[in-house]
Image (tube, rainbow, N blue to C red; front, side, top):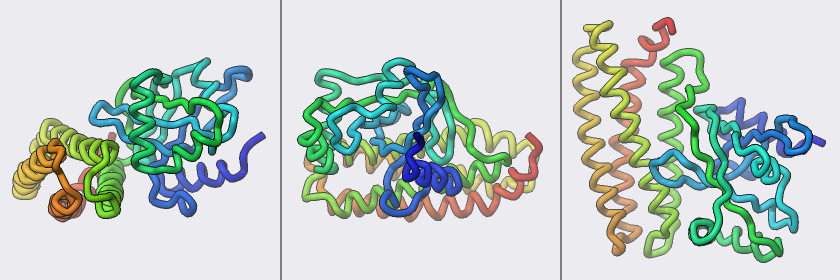
Length: 279
């Protein structure tokens, strides 16, 4: 029987590019679609997730709110590990891996360090709550029919993640937890990858098709170098065990200011032209 509350979250998520209202407003959410272990039917479940570095893998936890039984979606991925993930920007196929041993324990400890609610679920459940890694099987396409709209979707996801990380750093203790460091590093690696793709593919294509964009593309390439420098500095800071909240927050603020100005200018210059290109 469909869960009406879950369906409301799913509908909001799909209508608003991954954004939902209370009680999950501002949370990192994805939609996981699995194949029923007994029925073979497709089932979609909204889940919170944890970033896991630059590999593209994300992590979900089968807490079921601390219930004594594992959730149905967990039994589905045990039987059929190929799943579909929607993150609000991309829809892609992924392989689900149930983690065990030290890897599972370390990741769960990271989650608890970030949110003690996971420990409360574990205490209630009376079972070892599973942790699952979702690894993309290939690149997904943006959930947009026009290239410019797809670029805007990607940029908005970076804006949301920057805002979330600023909040997490500001609210952290004197030191930085392991998961928060990973959240920051995942963002850094994602931005670097995005800019590399633009420099290697999108900008050369536009150079050849729209000579009038020459000055704008030159500025955007220069801004990529500035952002790369700030990303390198933040990653170097995060690699130090002594990194403190105040210093990291100042670096995140600097990066956010630079990136948001860059994204705004890029959209102003490129989105109309990209939306006019026939796929």
